[in-house]
Image: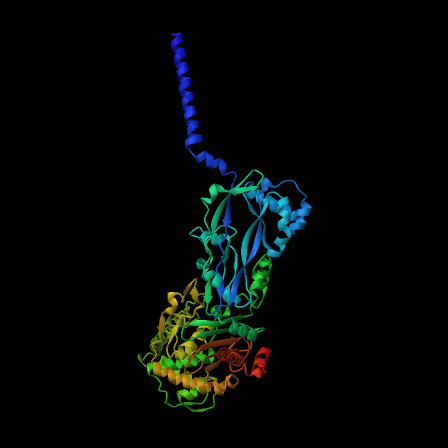
Length: 599
């Protein structure tokens, strides 16, 4: 019996031993799981950042390029005892900063790399690269930052910066990691998905001392970075530079559009800033200074500011009145200045003369006919019907809603309708006399400078427009996004535009003589937008040449008074610069640059 127990115990030991040996054989020979786990301790994943797409102007010049910068990375476990003071002098930090950065890296991971010093410029990197071999645990990772050769178009180009936590949470594709750069505004934001490219990965083998020993499995698992696509913009850099020069030291905006295509030739928001200051290690300080500036230089006025259009809106009132049949271009209307303030002399006015003289009282009467058709004997109901029809017609001009330019944060202005006045005064408690100031582009009406330039485009095209846009080609493909190829018609008969255009040509000679160019037929309309907080704003829209328009433009200069001075003079210089390539009126250029418009 004792012998049988002995054999049973031996059998148990033999079976148990066989099981352990089999498992060990499977782990060490048949399965690579634990082999890879062991290897992962010496395999380092290296991110390959793609080159961000470049940005060009319409003639092929660079607007935005990439320049190298470098991040200093650290693996705390590999850092060896060293003369910290020498290292600190080398990388330009204090001993306290060194301790704080190393502690932060240890909290992240002792064995994984993290950023120790970010955004080291190329010239600084050149000074330290040869010394880093003496400091195990530290290594360099190459990145790129944006650079702007001509320092133009700051608001429209936008800027990139490190992604923040809210943006990471919104990243449904989980593409971004902490520390990545992302477009924050302008074209950089709007076309982020196109320009960012696709990151790659490389797996490197390192020994316990952190010395690189080569590629893991000969690069079998590596992926290449894919560069982002380039943007080819509609901007004419020469015109843009001149426009910024004319508007420097002033507050306002300029928008110039090619009527035939909707391509934006120049877009200026003033005050502007050098986009190069929002790159590199000084980004935070420079951004804070721009934010603290009371003139809000980060505010993109062409698409975000909303102003009363003033008298430039009279031409739209005329088109609506003609289409509705409430006025006839040859009809004479007596004006004596008693209904609303007016600078036009008393007398009989037809439509042409009313636009030429910019008569407030004439368009007061036109707007009254548009609103009150006597459709209903109750004047409150009649005004509701008229305003509703008027608002619908204006929406076809791209007013009251964003035009959907390829920039973020565009505002749509305000074309007040029935719901708006019901909310303020109550239903059936307002009528034409309540809203009469809309007749001359004042009151509750608001337009963006982009919409004002688009109105000039519509008139130049005799009744249609393409959505204004800044990009005409992406990557190797020419042509804008499909949305910018759709023609938008206003529904106003083409023949009525000729009446307005002829009047606008004569109006220029009457109300903005400085803007006249002897050998170029310009059609324009001045405006002086009332400003309860100070001097009135100077407004002007125009296009040229009259019979084959190549440029439509709006200029808005805040607190500069009458539209025939600041805004019209500025627009005229830009039209001449674009069509002729030179300025033949240095006296006018000096007048605009000096900026003393109130006298």
